[in-house]
Image 1 (cartoon, rainbow, N blue to C red):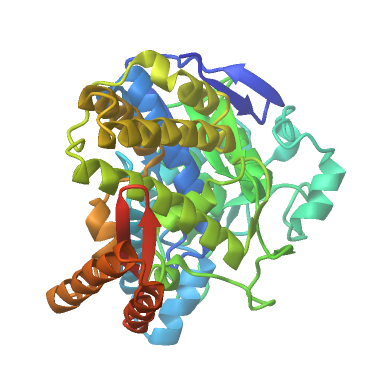
Image 2: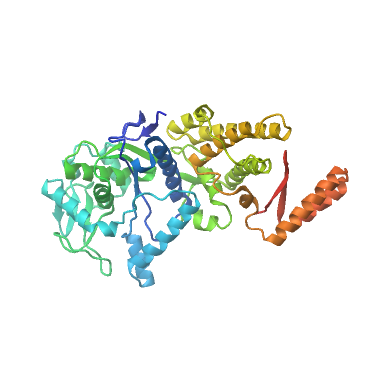
Length: 472
């Protein structure tokens, strides 16, 4: 498998070659925990989870070290804590727990490392000290600022002239700055905010230095892959890169930079001001996590994703078809998968290895689904052996699991929330409907179907018989 990734810095796809194949390092910018994550925050989690799975397949589970940070000191966190009259840790622990629960429900594997900014103050202060010592940063009026004019490669990642970046970043114009683009590494805390001691006075770190210091402490610089949303390319990742390289005199901060595209709501950018923010925490109460995950991966990760009710419906239908195949396989005694052949999965892994081309991977997945359906039909007609169907089942499951799908029991997928009494009643009605259809009593069959529908149940007729699920 040749893995190619689009490198934002190079502005082209590059064959992925880690510095050390026995220790592949990946860092993805994680949550700022002051509230529930919105659906846009979930996109990089799911995207880089697919990459994490692919890297583990290629290099081995123990060879990949994936870190996703937690920003647990921030203006919004401070404001929320002040509003509730509690320590910031009360806010951050509450919403970090909710974030992890929600991302677990979306099928995202937990990273190996989840460093917190507040637990790395020593590393942050040490890195700032190195930058001041080598002339890459300067202290002024209780602040420490990075000197952008002292780093000739500043702007290389975003590829924009410095003047354009200044205008686009809404930088704070302050008299103590040597240049408008210089950014804060350390700043005085406001009254009531958390305070840490430093050589430059009491205060707290700027946002950008936190990630640089945590990467250095947890993974070591340079790293193989740095990921995050396209909105972080500038100024956050640009500033991270500048700090990390200058602190150690490195030519490279990350060997590959990857950025996922925005998520739009019916053609509009999601924003609180427009009132179109969707929270997975609430959506998961109505929609299975795998459906949300399918929707998030339905477009190529670098492209915008238009989030609509229709997308959720299409995603549910796609997964229903796959789970129905698993259910039918189980009924035919084909629920014990055999080994898939490498040739069965060639198209799937070629798609996924081409810069995580999930739309093409979905197409390959459904080709495997159709192969399984065909074999199940032949098994039912006693025209083929079960072994061939088991091989097709293994291929479908491997491809689906590589994307984080088909992890539930198929009966639970369709009927999990139904009680035993309801299950028994529905099964009885379906059996009665079958007899009515067999006798060509279509009026009675339709009446029974209406009775089933009144129970909040949807009947699905398939090649191997009728199944059912609870309506959402």
